[in-house]
Amino acid sequence: MQAINTMEYVVRALRGYTVPWVVPVAKAWEVFDNEGQPRDPQVERQLRTLGSEAALAAGTLAAGHARCLRLIPLSGPAAAAASH
Image (tube, rainbow, N blue to C red; front, side, top):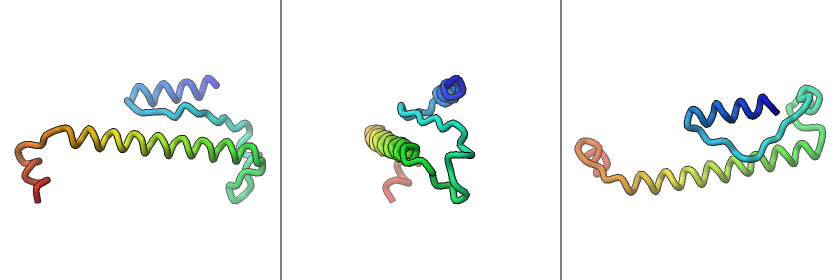
């Protein structure tokens, strides 16, 4: 878990966002088959949950970013380019 905590710290230090759901996969080389599919249904459920959380967070952040951009009035060359 120390590696995960360190990665989260680095992402936050770079002003990134981490999903609050963590899925550590011990011995990943044994958990996945040659096509990259999980052999363990529990691991597959956890990874699907992680993907859902990431997609939800991305949508939420994108919507918030779009709202913020609409609140910032454009002026100068940016306003001229936006009006065309």
